[in-house]
Image (tube, rainbow, N blue to C red; front, side, top):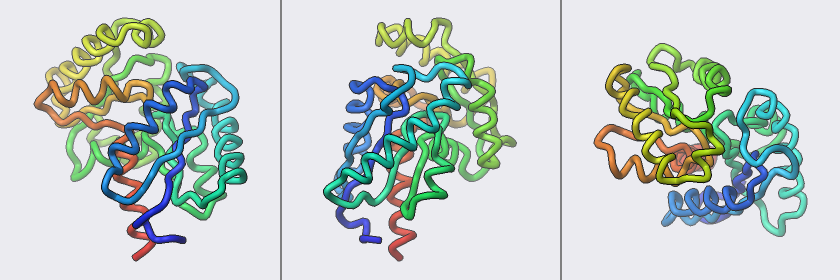
Length: 229
């Protein structure tokens, strides 16, 4: 495997919204600035514009796999790692088993960052039907003991997607419930399409906000340096 000094990371958006793909790709690229790594983005070829429920999450696994394999086959350069940019990490485990390169999920990375050293952490999100899936993902990574649970926005995710200011206000309120009533020490803004709002909340709150895309970028660097050492 090439060293992580220079090269390209492939970010796959399991949602079919290409604008979201570019937003997340750009955020990952900013997070990796100075590392020598660039980021390409690819969008799932089928499925919903936003994953809102467990059925869509499960179905997206195959779409993610297809998008990544097509991108790898068509690439004029080798990719060093893959980022699966949906909070439920659809297809990550299968791709990790099939590919000879690191495959990082933004959920995996955010959970690891939020729960490090046994601290209490919660999640704030806009997708009520994915609460059980997110809780299961926390358990999959052995972090259930410190997990304070998921706090939700009052409005539906598609309503908030169309109104960034309302999305910010409602997610910030959910964060406050995590740190107040639940006594969380860190809060994950759980959702790839919520990345811009996550950044705004991180700048506006004194508690630690864990942003999934930057967390995944950091984990990619760790994986690459470990592999290259």
